[in-house]
Image (spheres, helix red, strand yellow):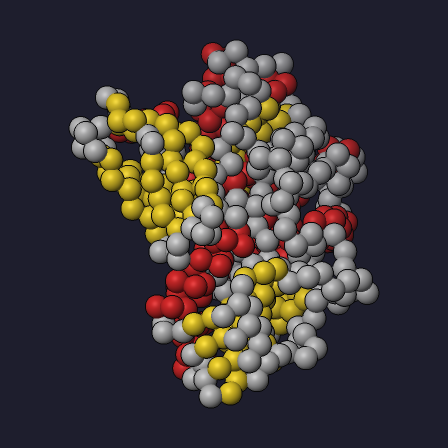
Length: 500
């Protein structure tokens, strides 16, 4: 079993070297220059069984997106590298002379790759079976996660609820519910293109063209909205200002999910030569837990997502919140299946999925002898004001994954310093460049890093640092945590730190 890494364990009877509590001088100088107090930073550096540095490492802190390491580590060990989410088209009706005589069920299974192209491929499979007409409704089955629509009633994290990083997943999240918007302006005119094509959905704008920096186009952006006319047509409206002679692209989550699925399904099915007579509606709650083979239905088409290690790369390298939250909820609802990719976890009655996921994480920490006191995993992504974890606890996760059978898959999901992901432009001329693998985290008042840094002797060190302060902006917090990474990369024997 992995030794505990909280300070009481580090310093009591486990044969570990005594930790230095003082921060390296290079880090302290940067904190002082930004007026950030040293006690706003928690940090720990482990080299094998030696604790090189531990400064406030036992305090529970906001980790920002480094919390994704908890989700991906537990996800990889709990679900395994062959785990795949899935989507199914099912029915209980017969097909007679090209007509499906009943409802078509679109069943969500936490498929992280369920996009417009996948939907088109699944519907083409129906056409290949000779189905031309659906004489029934399209049923959207999101019942794998409970509640089925966690986005409804959820308070937005910030004032930009429409942007991708704020999308809250459900078990049947189609195309991340996003509209891809291309905006191109001249001095007098703004043209807007929208993808994917949705039936009876248009886009317009009342944005004013202004003189300004194209690079700062978001300064004039205002939350968009959509309107429904009496005939059921939808119009997306962009608001704010936009620079003249500027071309920019973004993605927005503005349509209701049922509307989005309805319009994308109809546009795609029509393009493939199909028709549907009914409406699009959500599957009602049955009061029963989902099963791999719903009674009374058969599968017409399915899609399985990429294997979990590939999804982890998107979660950790690009810090994708929606994928992280989907994996978190998968921990509370799914298990790996070598044939299907995944299947629902057996349970007596439906349970709150997020609560089950937290219990799975809690049990994983207990199995690895990592204390969970003060830890709170909110949604698994780190996009949270309530999530907390101590740097020492995070270091325990990283140590556990060094000993995991899936250590290569986990480590390869982390950004490589100076090369890719969220670390691609950081520490470019450092000895850590192209060697260290670091997950980053940033919120308005949080800067954090966690990962693996080889020292000057190529010994792999676990490094975690978190700064919680309103003064971390303007690159101040980032400079301090980057200085710690560089300090470790230059170290060999136990480094010399500033005096008491």
